[in-house]
Image (cartoon, rainbow, N blue to C red; front, side):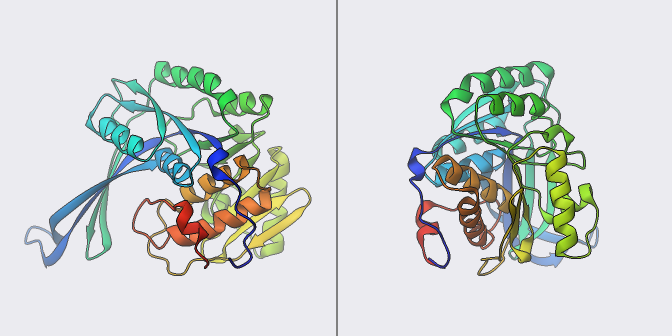
Length: 313
């Protein structure tokens, strides 16, 4: 495989994923006319699909690479939560989902017509203190059994205790990878690695004029947050790893970009599995970049299997 390092023994990897989970629902249909009620297309729904989303998609991506994967999150006492549980079990993920009876499990409903997304409808509420505290307690008990921790922040309240989780994990000697959200990264202080995309980083450090300016801003942020590394995913420009000892860039490997939703989940899951299996940070990044190039060729939140990443690009 072009420029790819040896593949580590991923079945030995143990990954603990914590964060905001959601159920991604897709309604597929044909569009043949415009509604007489408003200037919008009428979609005749012919089939539907359900997939785990958010941190649940990170977990299933890790499991698809043969890692032993545990997922911690909060869900409602509702039908979408039950669907998530079934899907995660079938994907080989050990899901420890705290139930909050006052919470509506986050659902993202996408309407697809002629292979294009026409509409997305979101259903979501915020988890309560008791369920979040229960997740933190579960986190403490699960920490000794993992090699790498992934904190997947989708801004839905599931990582209210993120700073404490980072502190606990680092004190236990566990690397912590964070997929960040929002414009305040101070709560991720002390993590091993952050994986913002290009637009997310711009919200935090401002717009850069060239690669040298990007490097200066990224390194300043990395130092301010006491991170070992900062990995910026840059869409068609590939991804760049910033560490104290320098910068490593990987060009994009995408053969054909079909859908970028969930690509960040694949990146951080692949990083976690490779690091947990003993790969270096740079080698893990190269495998993550390779996996991202595969997953963007699939529709919606998807996974990349171990067999797929073994195929030469």
